[in-house]
Image (cartoon, rainbow, N blue to C red; front, top):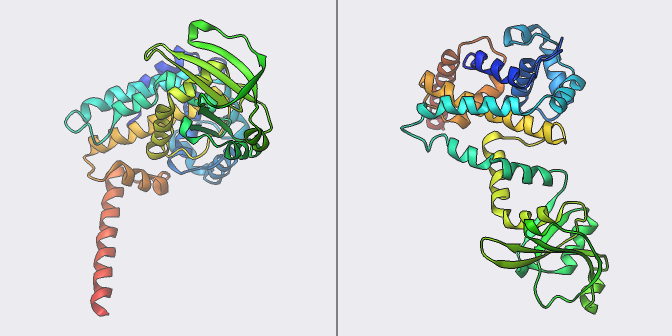
Length: 331
């Protein structure tokens, strides 16, 4: 955390009054707790609390000024403005960009900004509480779709013209968004109705860019009609978003379900990813970001300078390599 620009961080906190009337567990404590969880692959708030309490004597030198309780961390993630950490991530990205000007492919900061575009992230977070399957019209199989429904999963599929449907209810829509209709329907063809007896939702949407009128079927009756259309239209961006999150930020679980909590976790994860990228360049480390993050995951609590730590790892690797070679020749 020596590479964390404390002044810039505090500016972001002050901008959104993050520490206003806070006596214990500041935004910095929250950031450090989430950073620890990110670096060490913690799986839950209870996991974070247990691990940090087990090393209570080391917390002060790590920068903590308050004890960490899962309820306190949960409240902070829920209530403190996520824009504090989004703004701070942008500060770090601005610092990292010049460092990687000669080899931008190594750390794809531009892709991170694209993947975390506000429109994409809001759409992805609207899907977060559910499992969603998005399919083209070539994949319409009502027997399989009903299995999704029985498993409490949701789907959006572009429908074919020859699918026979009967409208049961009409719902109001805002046609300025491109949505043309929102209906509750049932299948009328005997074979289709037999394998999918429940009601469906049909959303008709006019794509302003292509001038094409698209119709979608879904079993989700909660999300706005426009979101249903956007799920299909942005299906590749959504897939890339979660793929990027999994590959680069290594987020396997979210510690909260609210929009604020999820965005807070994502932006702190981005900050840690970029901080490691900054440290890598400034220290002249040759290892990849993946290797550095793996090493940090088991050494984040060590009172050892980073360069000294990596020299030790290199020495151990050489010993292991030599040892394996000797065993091989002994055979």
